Image 1 (cartoon, rainbow, N blue to C red):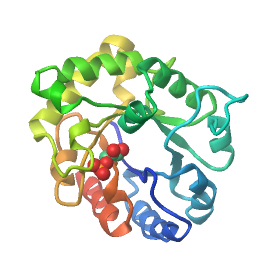
Image 2: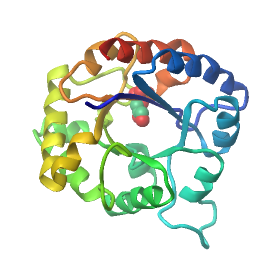
Image 3: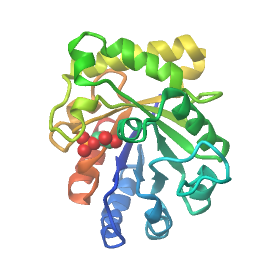
Amino acid sequence: MRRKLIAGNWKMNGSMAALVELDAIATAATRSPGVDVAVAVPATLIAPATARAPTLAIGAQDVHHGDCGAHTGCVSAAMVREVGARFSLVGHSERRADQAESDAHVRDKATAARRAGLDVILCVGETSEERDAGRAEAVVTAQLAASLPDDAAGPWLSVAYEPIWAIGTGRTPTTADVAAMHGALRARLRDLLGVEAEAIRLLYGGSVNDANAGELLGAGDVDGALVGGASLTAAKFVPIIEAAARLG
Ligand code: 13P
């Protein structure tokens, strides 16, 4: 039985003042003991977020694939862990596009994060052109296979299916499409990992909000959500946590 995970991704948003939002999010998490709640904040906010909300799982949005060295401007997994991060996203489509991260690079980042003791949320997803061409499942399952870290296993690893065309657009796939994709991801994980596949959580991400969370979280093989815009305020994020709690 996989526990639901509701993870926020603040992207390049937030400030010291915005950390006040974590107070009500942490309270909602405490009130929903059956749900895991996490928030990936900008690297500069990891330490203050952890200090402000010590019961909440605070994480990074990216880590370097190396442990240390001459990489100006980069931050390692050990560095974010030292200041309180418990997990990191890797392979978000915005990084795959903006920083030209390949599947192999994402795999190395995920492996580095795990080596440093972080949980990992590995992101995959197709473009609208790939979906329209009927290639969504082939593209996404191939991304998964090529990005999986060494010794992949749950529950430290989660996979977030985030169709690129659904991110920040207010558009979502049908619940049938989400269930079909998650079923395909689970099947590929079973092929690759055998029984280890069962404990890996599959999250849906892309325009999740308080109105659609219940339905999306209830779809087959959906073990949680990765939430962007609606994670920036407690007013929008807490109802999503509560929707997950109602599903048990
Ligand atoms: P939105 O929830 O803003 O669509 O973003 C989804 C996302 O990219 C989370 O990583």
